[in-house]
Length: 234
Image (cartoon, rainbow, N blue to C red; front, side, top):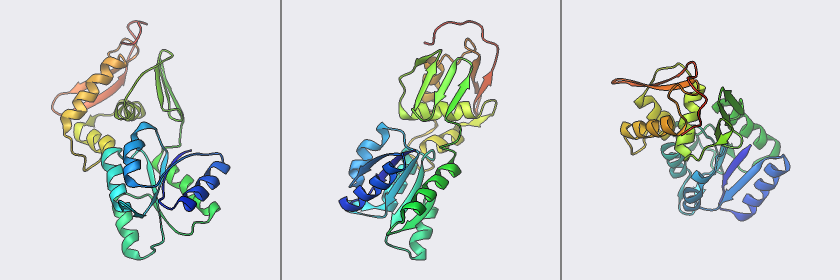
């Protein structure tokens, strides 16, 4: 797994990273919410292990930021010294997938992280092969006819979701909430812009066997069709 860790205590952060890396996982750690916000979008993570008490905010601030800007494709497990019911409910209602009380036990921590990732589907099929298209979820890449495309985080997330739901009619609002988060400060025109970019960048116009169609007044649908040529992706 690719694990993000936000823990302000350097000793705790080092110990958690040691446990996770010893089990064969990649782990990137930060001490502050500001650091996480600056770096988080540069890489793809399966799960975020989030401290609830931070020097420049709270775990709730971090959780809200992740759901609003990154979306729901990453699992979030909260780690804190507080075990009162109000804190647990607050975290879960804000979108946390699980809750662990410090001090964490290594085997339980690893089991909880794996379970959270399984529930979100982030660690299911790692490579999607759809004709000329190959999506590698572990490497966070999408190749067209063997050529890896340069994509932003949101373009990649949107493309993956479309390829995971072929033939389904997806509304603009649904895509906005799924990829950008329910409280994102963007509107459905953002979806339209990203769809247009994907259609051109990935040649989703029938030529390579897939067509991304606009459904007037509603949304979009990705359909398999007969390839009309073997031309390169634009």
